Length: 204
Image (cartoon, rainbow, N blue to C red; front, side):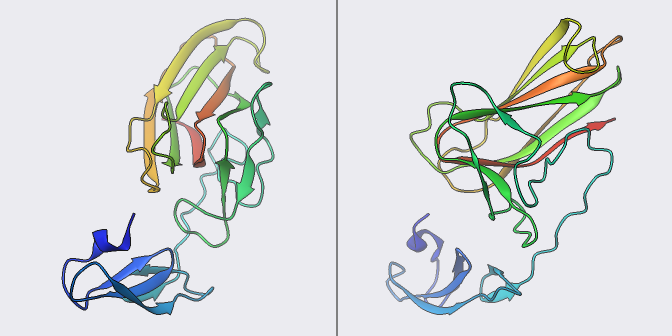
């Protein structure tokens, strides 16, 4: 987002990418004031602050959905570009990160579940205005404990938030797999120049 889009009045302080600027009289030019420190890397207006990391849920059925230090626990579907770990976190938590896709990709994981209602949630950011498709989560249920024994259901959850803004947004949905379900394959489809974070699957 251009800096000028944030300027409403002369002298206004605006925060962009951990840097504080001061708006000029024409509302089109800005002057850098200061950069936030490692200890307080985030800012609103003219104030820097330390991010408060959200608490982790012990009931998350997914492994490493917060991508604190790596993307372990997730596999890349054959034929797609492998994503990487990034220190950028959707909540600006300094001790965590996210999964970043420079090219379109699909990551997957098998999780053991029961036949109750589950909430699937994730944070997404899409930086490319030219992205043709939004992020999507696919859930495929199985009667076996290791995504085997026969598929018994398929659900698609599409994120319809703004694309190309560079702003993190959340998406969630509740899903009831039904009786006899022991596992589910989670597939997360990401367009180019996008990231995912805080992937959770929690019984409700």
